[in-house]
Amino acid sequence: MAKLRYRTLRENVVDEIRMKILNREYEPGMRIVEQNLSDELGVSRGPIREALRQLEQEGLVEYARNVGCSVKQITLEDIYEIYLLRSTYENLAVNTYGGQFSDEDLAQMEMIVAEMKNLGEDDLGELVDCDCRFHQIIVEKAGLNRLLKAWTELNYGNIVCYFAGNSDRKEAANRQHDIHERLLNVFRSKDEETICNAISEHYMKTVKRLIKEGSMSDESFKYKV
Image (cartoon, rainbow, N blue to C red):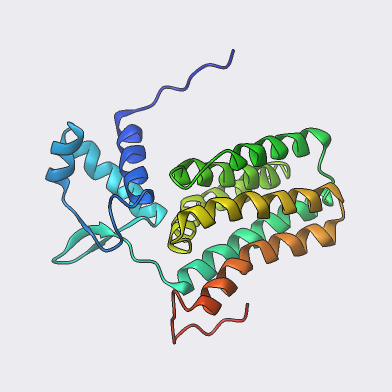
């Protein structure tokens, strides 16, 4: 049996605040007051402050002079940059092993996709976790620690993008299962070029959809997708 990893108070506080942001209990732009969080969670302000600094690094909150901490508003350019980097890192990983996913890799991905199918509109936190685990298999397989670290640092940026780009929760839940099932089918081909193209399209499709819907219109956005 695998040993359970000890979790610090700060880690638990980070998880609690993160899920409140992801579940939109804390809306984008909402000011976060340390003392209020301390009272709500029943912990001192020290772990709260440490947790907010980590969430700032993850891109979920931001600090501004005379305002303090607030839930970050994300732009279309933010989404584009994070998805561009993630797709690039994942394609680099695929290049190292020529797209040759093992039967074990594919079985793990299949299990994650099956989990997605059973999640509904109220389970977006779990859905994002499934998404992260699915894509982590792609990068971990390369066995390059620096590449994995760079990809992991964008992990929660990916979460921010996901929630910013999906206002309809039910539609988002259904969409995520379907697109990852299609990705899995492409991975079964073990064709390196086809897999890399599918990964790039997987990420840029969200940007294209947001531009088409006009849900995050940004006149300054100048990038080709």
